[in-house]
Amino acid sequence: MNGLTAALLVWTLISPSGGGHRGGGEIWPTHVACRNEGLEVFYQSCDSLQDFGFSVDQCSKKLQPHLSIRFGIILREDIRELFLDVLLLTKGASVLSLSYPICEDDLPKFSFCGRRKGEQVYYAGPVDNSSFDVPEGEYQVLLKLYNENRSTVACANVTVIAS
Ligand SMILES: *[C@@H]1O[C@H](CO)[C@@H](O)[C@H](O)[C@H]1NC(C)=O
Ligand SMILES: *[C@@H]1O[C@H](CO)[C@@H](O)[C@H](O)[C@H]1NC(C)=O
Ligand SMILES: *[C@@H]1O[C@H](CO)[C@@H](O)[C@H](O)[C@H]1NC(C)=O
Image (cartoon, rainbow, N blue to C red; front, side, top):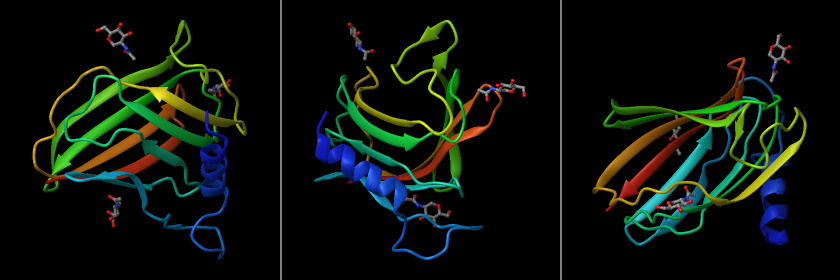
């Protein structure tokens, strides 16, 4: 793991939008997860309590089978179990809705499974295995991570622009 990247991620986590008060209705800055010729991915935390760091190592319209991501967050809940809901929209209409288990009690797929509230998670590594081409267009993706009590761990709205 690259120490500088980790430091930057932590900095992103704890220093949101140029000072000012935290509190209700926080609008987090838009971050670039990856940007390359033909593909741009932006995201914004939709959790009013915190922001998080995320990036994709290879940015290509041809999604690679071994996609590497980096993800850093301070946990606001225990994650003995962790689930991800994905909702894909084009032009405001929902086209795909998926739910993945990430940490299960008897099947902790990642080293961070089981971490406790208040701990920092930094993950850099592979996530998925399917390779496909992203068709041209603009997409909205809503992501939500939650634990077994359905308490939000992280939430993001993502814009993907493939040209
Ligand atoms: C996230 O959603 C807000 C409100 O709908 C929107 O203004 C913003 O552009 C979105 N950000 C991204 C990166 O998609
Ligand atoms: C879920 O809720 C139960 C009952 O309130 C509690 O005992 C348990 O610790 C919670 N689990 C997590 C991961 O927060
Ligand atoms: C990807 O698939 C290969 C076999 O097709 C498998 O060996 C590998 O473990 C998979 N990697 C991940 C991250 O799922």
